[in-house]
Length: 152
Length: 152
DNA sequence: AGCAATTAAATTGTGCGCAATCAGAATTTG
DNA sequence: CAAATTCTGATTGCGCACAATTTAATTGCT
Image 1 (tube, each protein chain N blue to C red):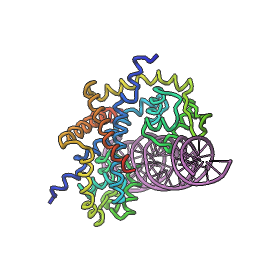
Image 2: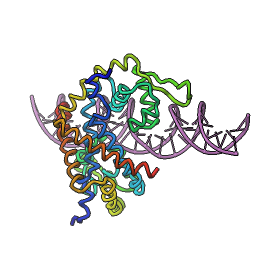
Image 3: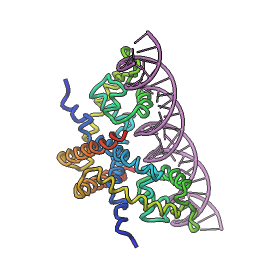
């Protein structure tokens, strides 16, 4: 006989599993659209960050994206190999690597700007619902981040 | 000068990015708790599925978890190496691999049942808020899944 | 100036996640 | 019944994620 406590271990009860599957499904939705640009999902959000603010260090970029150098270094090397950006050591501080978009990298923004609206449409969410969900997730991220930060 | 259309490409406007970072933060919250059990996050949700229903095929398990054999086969081999389960070919249909928990795998459920409440507490969400967010994410997953399914 | 501490990236190693491909088994169909 | 098709897992390859370690550069302290 199933215990009452089993309820808390059910897969369909878990917020984490809903989040986990939803994130994967969202990435899967982007994949065919990004394939046209020759980008993976993580490369896409990296380009979003760089279209907003160019000529920043790997560290600053990592803080925006919540990614560390173990992820960013090879990813940026691939984007560099694709001709979208250049990685150069800072002359002032040789420890720092500055990321600069190339003309090609800047130009890709025009192709990318059609993507967000296509995605929004497919979520079938109203602008209000989307903003609400997005902000709830952002707030939850901040709350969870307190725990993970203070333990390190 | 920044174009109006740039707004749609801003990182902090993206639902996908909020989802992406929140999912990673949630996984990071589980990590130290799961370390005590010797499980990764994906191994944990796999165990959740198996605690609910044991002796199922890799295919059925994959459908529950939204994971394919490329992910599950090596993951299940690791869980088998840890002594938590056994993988056996079905005698009726040799194509099918049946996953069975060992005594040790079943016993781990008792240790795991403390985890969900600890996580819920750290989200600082009321039970109602948590259920609402979880159900919204599940619904969004189902909507997005329509698009990704119909294209294949 | 000299040396420890700090900082920024890079590197290494493990484990997903998934597309693509392959192999073997079962089923369908002419 | 034989050929074609479908089905289930396994394998391979690539790209994240992230912990841990290493390397090199800078800063702080005496």
